[in-house]
Image (cartoon, rainbow, N blue to C red; front, side, top):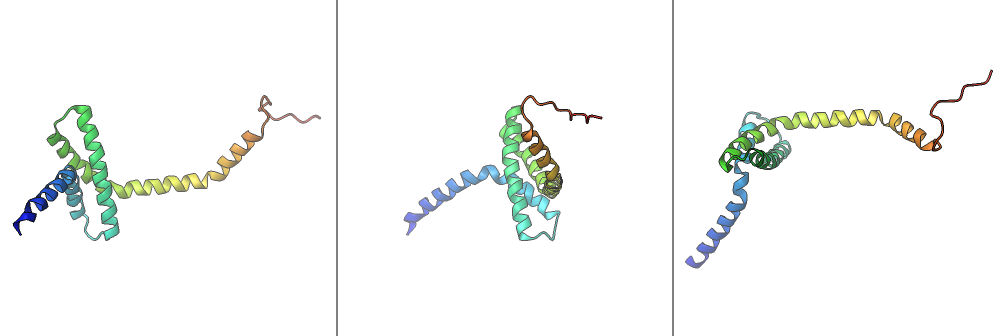
Length: 132
């Protein structure tokens, strides 16, 4: 019966090696989530996912740019994940506002494109003056 234990520990060790780089980001998201009680499960999942993804990429980029050791990058990444969790609502609202403004201005954009396509190459851009 003791023959399966080493394989289980080997699998757990492999899973830990893959998950360990994301732990500081998950902890930063967890601290931010504790400061915002009453969130739904869907909102928590989305914010955790965004926090961990932003943590992973931004902390790697910051560490590479400034040549910091991995530990310093993880500390910076913790705060990046914390801020990303809190900022997701503002990012989402800004994206919605930008989309609404683009959609409301779409008829004018389409009209401008259609008018520019309808002009002949080399044609004058000014309108002809009416003869009196």
